View 1 (cartoon, rainbow, N blue to C red):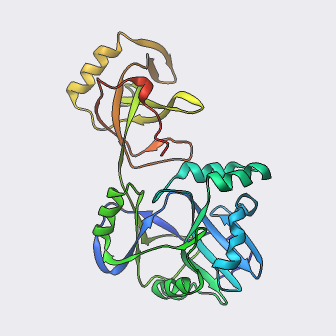
View 2 (tube, rainbow, N blue to C red):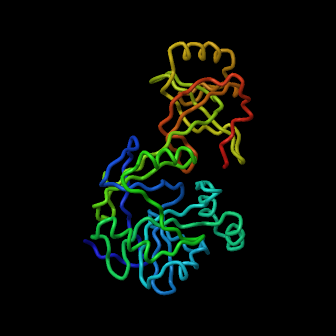
Length: 307
């Protein structure tokens, strides 16, 4: 196994997409947090944080200085998620906002308005290399050396009962859960089926901006953002009945505007509900399906959900 190097890029172990929650006595289950994957390196009083792609973001998060009090080990490398909480939910946009800042004055102000928390779920190094140790042993070590605080939290997990935690994640509007085999070691720079992310589908009301008929019928839908109205966020190809397609095309003929790059744009006066699994950092929705027209919805009310 390659020797770990402090304060340099380490490509973490990555999860595979799962399909649905399950129960199994040789797995544990954790909440899925909506933020940035962060690896924290500490040696004595020196602490640095890296994204999964190796970008050093230490200067963006003064909260890392609290590691001296929260992490009770001289030399460690920890794996986790950088998040911003609102109530008991993690808000991706808030942490992404923190990650975009570079002005020290704005960073200090954001520490008050958008405080960052680092949820730790694994330990790669603690006095010695821990990657060959099994997951539950790494969890034991993690809970021994990380003292819960506003800035650093060892993630919760449950044994066996993935369905129960998944139900809770839906009730609390979390992103989903992560399932992990108890007997796994930590292998850097791979994507493994021994770790599964099981995300919750979400619904959102969108404005119909246009449509395509080639190669298949699809709606181009958009949302309003603070800095932009009618931003395209998805091309929705699935979920339509034949009658819904026909009725839409008949209506769309009367409100067509310009045609560009395979899309016939229309006046943004119609709305529909879209189901989606996840979104990119630029708010593009993935794994989408059509869930019905919204005849009573006002297009000006179709905003991205800043929660």
